[in-house]
Image (tube, rainbow over all chains, first blue to last red; front, top):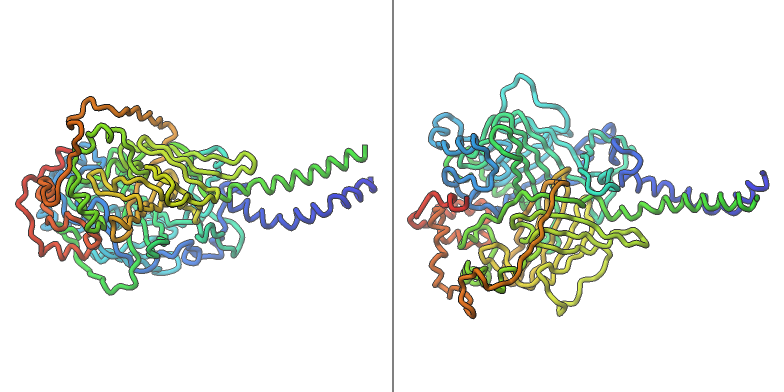
Length: 298
Length: 294
């Protein structure tokens, strides 16, 4: 037996050394690919890295909305009852048909179209910055609104709902689908908050970019409008948003794209999905704060 | 006997090494895009004469203004496909994405995007784009790579087509960069269209789909036929410059200054709202324009 082991070691030793040398490399690879640690995590450790430090992408700065689509619904106040493309149910259409901007103005509800479900659609500029290590803040010049994206926490109980509601943020998409082998199953989001990966190691770059995007879920909102013309969302609506940024290699301009999914059992037949994109601007020199206005586009 | 045992151990070591090497393929795929995706953008929502927010140059605007809606009724256009990106936006753009793997290396050779109106492959194997003189197609030629959690692919060799369904042109010189990101059960594509012939700057727009494994994409049984068309043989409906009598209908129906309706890069910026306040509008012809769209 001793002879066998020696022979085996002599013949297999180089292979073992090779495998041992490669093991850490593939361990990272396997981990990043989602093998062997389903339900745990990404290559971040929340105990050692705050959400600000763990950000896979820098979303901060000044951004200007560029309205290249659905211009007639965003750059002008659409006509009453124009809810084309929005999946309103019968009750929602009834509310939209009764829209009265003068009444909103008289009742102090001019911010109805500036709530969390719609504010990213309103033409204007946004300023994104870290209020602290766990709170990303978005200020808008249109309607002069403030959104606080909390990494952790939950909607306050017993407090009155607000236009912007309570937003819970998380970094997602650090790892691939753990059921890829099955081909096409839904990806389970893996938040930094659930991570237990290698301490102090940042996410691995792929193609020069760090994987990941910002997911924000907002609830506890005052009922408002999806469009300026009174297309409603109710008090139980949920707003799910995905923030992503990239640089266009042709123009070298940096863009922020926000995909918004509004789910509202009261007024929508199915979730409503919209997009807004913003171009990075150098500073806040064009900042043009306006109050909420029921009868203007911004 | 001893020799057999040693060989088995050797085989085991090699097998272990092979196991470690196998997942290299998945480095190519940072998220699983494959499967059935149900669209959530139903059309591009534009009427004839609505070029708002599109960075058209003068040549693009001239082409757009000469376009006649009846061009779709020409027999040769009835089954004409859209360029790949707008083909993914036209209802019902049910989408199926699959991959083809190299049987030897198990690496992804291409992503195959199949929709009712659009079908194309995104080559992931590092092959170069063909020379400029190679054939241009409605599906173009696409090569891709992963950037973070996003599949980014560049398409060129497109045939002349349209950016919108109301005649805004896309030239054969256009390049489209598409970014595909999966957000849980949602799939978002960001299209960045560069067209030196008709645009002054890149034009950006998005579409989204929802994961829908039960979806069944119907066939597209279209056959070119003169039957049912109202266009006499040999004629091509179009408008000469300045003669398009339906061009301002959009502006009149929506109460938008005709100048704004003509588009241009400036119209996409929030500050354009101030400028619009100084512009004249035409007398409105209706406020119920949306009713005809169902």
